[in-house]
Amino acid sequence: MSTCTTLSRELHEPMGGTATTGTTWLLLEQSGPWGAKALTQSHLDPELGRALGARAEGTGVRVALIRRPGRHADCPPTPSRQVYLGHTRPGNAWLRDVAVADPADLLDLDFAALGAGDHGRTGTAYQGDPLALVCTNGRRDRCCALLGRPLAAELAAMGHATVWETTHLGGHRFSPTMLVLPYGYAYGRLSPHTAKEVLTATHEGRMVGEWCRGRSAWPPPGQAAELAVRRRTGEDRAEALTVSQQRAGDGWSVTVSHQDGRSWLAEVTAGVSEPPRSQSCGAELVTPARYDVRTITPIPATLPQATEL
Image 1: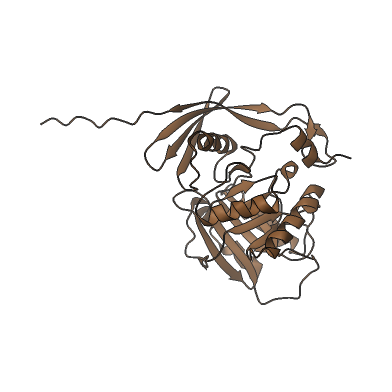
Image 2: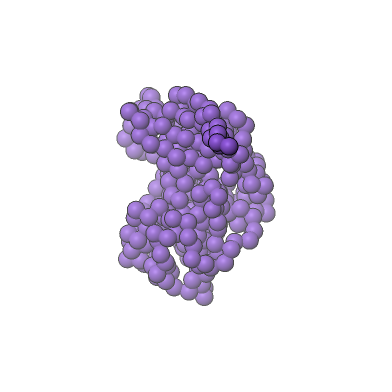
């Protein structure tokens, strides 16, 4: 039987504009098995998981569980849990390394400030390779386990010490999927070779457009517009572009600005991918949303105002 991933590939479904949105990520280490709704269906206290989800609601913070690649039996109790906090907006992207003895302490964080990009000096500045987060939640979709777990294991075997398995990143049909911090770009349809290429580029402050689904800091229309401008200009520096969008008729008007002063206006429309397909293995057939960039127009630089002598 064909999987959702196989069908998506065969139909050449575009990936741009499909990244899960979140300006800031809160990643909590939790060993053992995960259910489809991992925050409340794992060996984490479900009341705590529910409370973390509620605190994050509407703040721009995404909460996910992480674990080391390999067997998923519960590990013996440890004095602390690994936690990462990562903000993904260009110009203020940061990644913080935190250890907590009791995960309930995370409820004391200022989620609104985190979502806005203020870490309040929580933890310490992360030092190391880019953080590679590979979705492996097979209870959410079997493709994530069948394709994600081998990718995470291979990256770890290749010596990338900061690879973690993670819960839902969205887009099961693009498995194996990976989110890379600190910049927050999501990727899909990866192989060990292309994933390593992505991590090398991230280490150098670049992104790789070919397998990119979008930057989680932006809503889907902005993600699609940014990637379209990158394809047009060849720009791959991760922090070079910022995005702002507004509704315009049936679509969006998205301004993509370069740090060198250039900018472009992209007109983005929402459509659906035909024919109907499952977004997850075993799910009903649907026509997934897609975001098409119809036009990209350079915005002329504003001329300096004349000064009267």
